[in-house]
Image 1: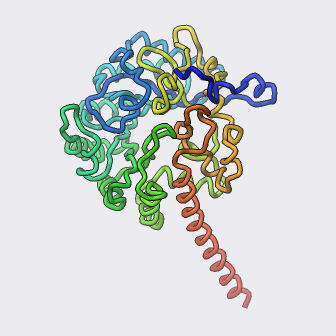
Image 2 (image 1 turned 120 degrees about the vertical axis):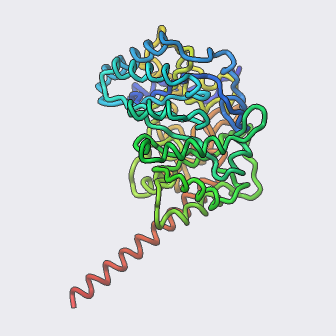
Length: 403
């Protein structure tokens, strides 16, 4: 825990409420159902960064904690009149909890929560066998899998504790998941952007499994532990190469590109990566503690902590915390440099966790600011060129019809 208060610890939530701001209810609940993992990925934000609180967590969420979580989510749903919520089964590696236990958890959640409950799990894929796939198909549990492109690229980072690569096992699981039998629960692939790899090879390796969506993530970094740079904008250059290949055919959704396109056209974002939409997610740790985004673990020890617990605190109690408000107040949370930026409404300051700088906290530009500016500018130029061409075609058609 930082000894000196940093933003947003100094944020006056009472003043925000007096001024008319109202918190957005949580609609996504990330349950850390298992706190350990069977892989030792070199870039993992849970195990390899500043916050090491996973060491104090029980390995698996108990049935009592599951019931308490279901009860608290139901309370939140009823208080705010929510028609639906999303529950993400997360870890560690959530499949380490086992198929029988996971099935009981999903049934408990759906029985207790008076709303439509969409359940998804994000897994490394190594344990995704037919037992789990049959269960997920039966209970309509969506499955997202982490895959870092080619076998060589994937196995560079995503290895077992004894140093063996995991790509072969993940690829075998994805073959099953993408088959007609299980395709209906396949939600997509998550891939960490890595400028050391060939972007087109990475993209095509992901497309080989016919994912409905691909989620490219910038590696989680802060101003205290910045990303490695070999050029001024290596991550933008890597992503732009993929965007240019993807844009004309779009064989799968690419969430980052789709979000930027939507924002450029005046829409609202649905992810914390970009945009100014309020974050409506909260984390429940294995022992029942409530946390802010677990990605904040990259900042410092205790960064995600709220001091709240399901046993004696509600989710509404979390809504009034400065750390939650800071991720819901949009442009008010931006640094001065961001507020003056021409792409601020699209960039939104970048991912909240990537803004951290010791001493000033989270009110800074993203550590990926140059990359985001270049990527958004490039996509904007492509869209404007398309709109201009379409307008020219329309004008020509109208002229011919007038003749």
